[in-house]
Length: 192
Image (cartoon, rainbow, N blue to C red; front, side, top):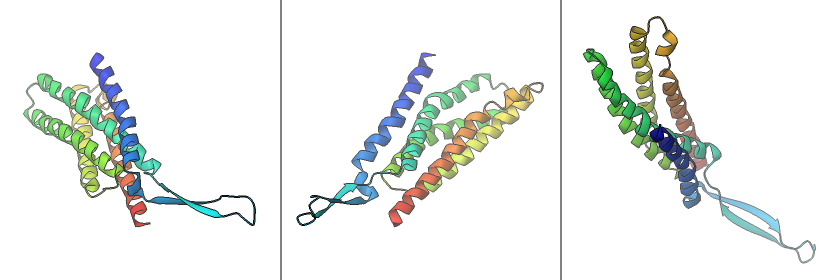
């Protein structure tokens, strides 16, 4: 139980701290905001001053990065180790064990890649986002399918139990789509 609390707290802190830190340190990568303001209200002595400030990352990019960093940490600290524990209970289903091994290994690697890609999106480097999004979509669809099929075989009389692992897979798919949207937004800001 403590492991879940510590992992969740770590993910929450990282989801807030990393986007704030990277967003502040790399604000200049998102362009400059120019604002004109009047210095003196007197019409004869008044002048207009142009102030410049860093624009900073758009809200969508910050939210997507924070959510994917948290999801990467949760995957690395909770879901992938739980998949390793499933090896103990896999029984004599060699195909299930083989696919489970691939999915768990992919989960560990994907967690690291998600965190790195989320950080790259925050500093407006979107080159590898499409590969990571594709990998995340395939991985989470494989997780949903694997556990749905295994659960249907084991829990024939309670199919809702078999579909429970599809909830985190659906969240992973939504976060991958969100990361893709954030990268598209970052590319639009870069073009403008």
